[in-house]
Length: 399
Ligand code: SF4
Image (tube, rainbow, N blue to C red; front, side):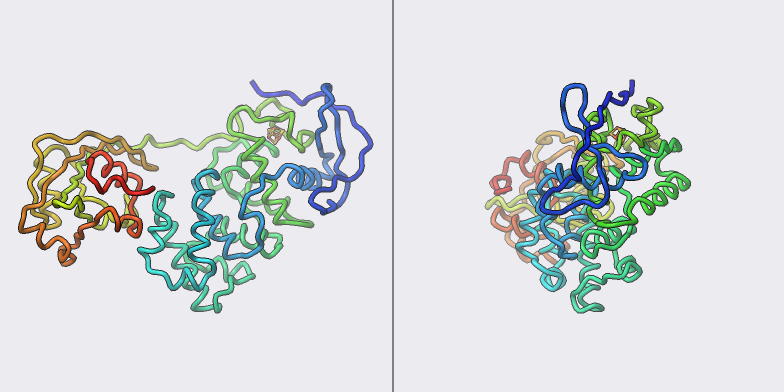
């Protein structure tokens, strides 16, 4: 059941001012039946209402305190598919370690992945690294301010280019992410499924129209913020929305059916074994993980399948000579975007010969990693969980 537009009474009000910035045009202040103040839009000033609302309600997030295109790029990549609360734990730490494009470009991939460790979707970090290296090689470390050059950088799609262009350079460049797609679908009554080519074209077209005008970066952020905090996937808070008057979904009582979701495939169930092969000092043998699943991060040997036989094969594949414990240590269920992994965790003790050469085993692609080394090695969340289950000293590293 969708929400109906609240009964609002118009009050003559001054142009809204916030953070010392006067918004252009008139945003009307409205008072609802309970005396609460709302900003609403006439068809002519939807943009103004959005900007006024954003100035008054935007969350104070660290990436909103900068116009540095490199920092904005980092934040936008981190925020893709990741919650703001999670990114808050990484963003400032990452920038403290790599404060500018030169610092990130000269870092090793392992260094970058270790700072990204736990954020997931590691391909993003690798592409950001490649894109920033290109900026240093071709543009002297300055992120290009023209959209075409930006779009040509590795890992910079239309969304990221638009975010950097509008927020850092104040260009009238549109962007559409999940939040913006939801707001625009409801606002304009777009009722074809998300993800379909015609729907995407329409959304970008609408985003392009609405971004034209003063403060395009703030406008794009207002749409994203509205989607994140007011026009939420379920039970949108239309009573607090600044653009109720022009919202087609609200007027037609379709806020609960728009946007039309794209058909999702159920994640594939995959049975896997993982083997924590350790030496007497509690160091575990780590190998490069499969790129498709773990972005090439270091992790313990894994293999699709079940049981001790598969676990031994996983060890053999990496030339690790170790004796398995009789029973698995336990099971972990781990959900990735398209797969649901059911991981059977085995523990194994390195043979004395292997243990003696563990630290010199780089030739096999495996390396012995102790608790002290873990902070400098990029490992996935799944690897952390596996190590914890194996109950080695190595699992008690600082998160
Ligand atoms: S844009 Fe979203 S929150 Fe605003 S009125 Fe429409 S459905 Fe409600």
